[in-house]
Amino acid sequence: MDSHQALFMPSRLGETTSIKIVSVPTKDGKGGLPATILVLNQYTGSVEAVLNAADLTAVRTAAGSGLATRYYADPNAKNLVVFGAGAQGRSHVDMMIAARPTINRIAIWNRGDERRNKLINELRDSYPNREIVSANEDLENEVRQADIICTCTNATSPVLFGKWLKSGVHLNCVGSYTKDMHEVDAETIKKAELIVVDSIDACSLEAGELIKSSQPQDWLEIGQVATSKMNVEQSRNKITLFKSVGISVQDSAISGLMVKLAKENKEGTIVPF
Image 1: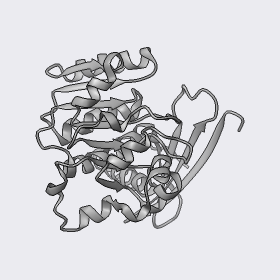
Image 2: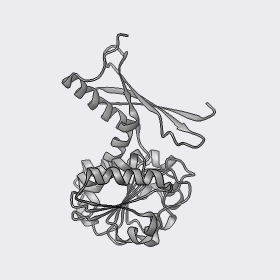
Image 3: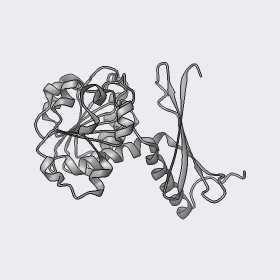
């Protein structure tokens, strides 16, 4: 397609087999990422469900960041900075508040004013007792105060710089997914005292910032952390970074859950096939 690159991502987790189809814009990208998940019946192999994956992708990605945040962010985190005002940015705000309810100031950075202001107004409605501000006017100062930072952009050159980071800050970097994309600079990667990834294999191929400035042998997988008895608390006074490029098994996890809930609650539309 001239305007989109189509990606096909099959996976299986437990009893769920799914395939996600994503169209990545090759031009302006203002329409977001159209995405659909097909869930297959494990007995017949036929398509059991068709799900709109745009919001599900944002939620499952933010859920990975939420898990890393629970492990490594300051338990009393107050200040959150989010780069990007799209679906991922919104989902990350919600997930960070769920992981660290102590957050009381949220600063949003986005290149375009319209989308940034729209998200700020939505967040003020959703979280009236928290301070929601634009980070564009004084980004460096906002970052220097941040306890948690989430980068959710498709930037090809850095928008976050390591010289701004304070000790003990936790970063979730989820926007870049190719070797040529860099949301953060080399100093950010080098200052990170612990790097955790969703998949070492995937990040070795797709995480531009990590490939340029670090080595896979120095990374931990979030799955290793979750299934081991590692003492995560000793890393909470360090600069920690979680990098996610997205792995298809996350799509099977969330789509399987959604199909289960839809059946239990008798929701959705049944189409004869």
